[in-house]
Image (cartoon, rainbow, N blue to C red):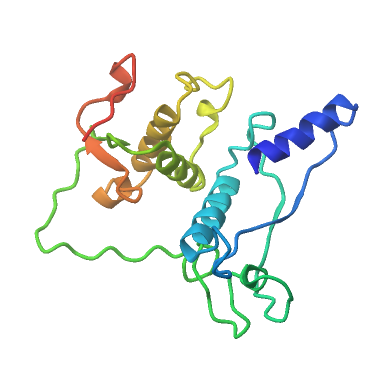
Length: 218
């Protein structure tokens, strides 16, 4: 979607309409479909819509419009159970026609309240103030991008890793994710679960900023 939005922005700018606001009127992914349809599944729908919401909340924007969240309408809130056509046409809703939730992408009131972490059987010591949160080794760019979008969507200042920012270089997802993960951790209660990011990050006692290139820790 980012590429499509920038393509429209580029075309409008070439015609002299660079200040025209762009809105995504409809985007989504079906969670089910007919046996001959490739792609519809709850996992794919949750990944697409969940990452879309996280990206929009992060205010990262697009390469041509950094720091700007484009107004986007998600298709759809409810299933259209009487709609004709392939099975996927009736399976875009976050909620089914009986009002039950199909899958959670983090926009419901209950899902926005973080669960209280369970007390571990063996008490874990809190990391010291000199700890840093960094990406684990072997994590894919797609997973790191999701963690990056999440961290930036939690109110931290990610402007330094935007184009022209003081920490934009090196311009890699791993480097930007390391910045966002650590900033989120340093602004949190610094509990171990504040540096988890769906098991894509870990704590280290070595300051990654001391190295000329980003080092990923196991």
